[in-house]
Image (cartoon, rainbow, N blue to C red):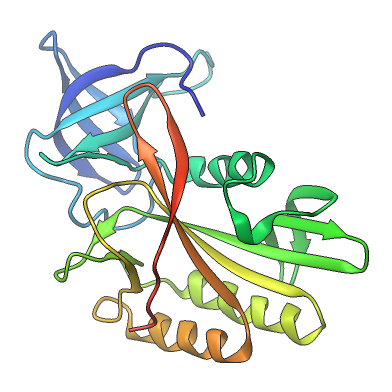
Amino acid sequence: MEFDGALIPGHLLRRYKRFLADVELDGGDMVTVHCPNSGSMLGCLGDRWPVLLSRSHNPKRKYPLTWEMVHNGRCWVGINTHLANRLVVDAILDGTIAELRGFDSLRREVSYGDSSRIDVLLEGPGERCFVEVKNVTMVDERGRYAFPDAVTTRGRKHLRELSVMLRRGHRAVMLFVIQRSDGRGFAPAAKIDPAYAAEFAAAIRCGVEAIAYRAEVTPRSISIVEAVPLTIR
């Protein structure tokens, strides 16, 4: 996925009200930007860390600039959770995600479960595969990529709904998209949300597949490039 036009550089001043951040542009102007991430963004909010912003041409937007990534001194971290599904679709279609090759059709945001929408539904002769996508921006104290970065009741609900699809005879996949490159391996963030970690382990025992893939994040583009080993603990 390539960005439309060059991203706008600046430095992070603060993030607040979940979906807003103040940024000092390289020219010195102070702007309020949209933050497309509802998590705590633990490890992504360093004082005056470099950030890159995209510009929307929608005249109805109150805040035309969107925060896309932050540099932590080691790598760019993609913080826009809305891009994760798009990255997954591109990687399925080009065959990068080996576990999800060979299906005839791909649909996005299909209603299922208890008033939910599955991120990606793959279908082939006699087979349906439900794929839930989660964006990962955190590295834990052991240097592992980890999810979630805040307590998530919604995330637990998605795990339960995947388990239901499995019991109905379908494939069910939890896919973690890691938008940074300075960690090793992946594990659920049990210290942050032990209930999610327990639900995750239960889903795996039930037969839900869990896979993690890392995306290469650059100022010009973001794309999924490789699988990351996953551990339950």
